[in-house]
Length: 62
Figure 1 (cartoon, rainbow, N blue to C red):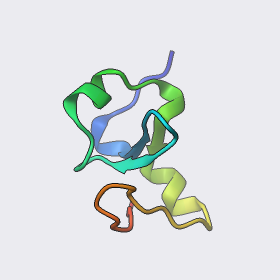
Figure 2: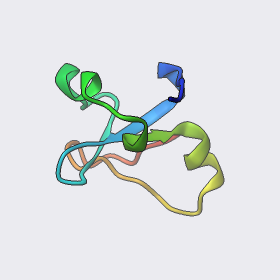
Figure 3: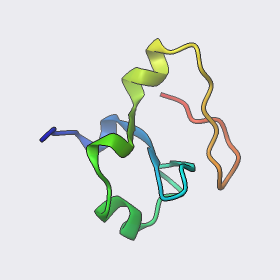
């Protein structure tokens, strides 16, 4: 079991494999969240990949 601070989470992966920023995530999605569905801000800082929210279409930043 992992422990994550909410302010360290940049986005989540929801049902269907969509990536959703924290602003677009629903309370239900946050309550159903598992460790495998978390994209941390540190990943965005250290990765050469750019992530976009599948709902608002904005770039997800660290």
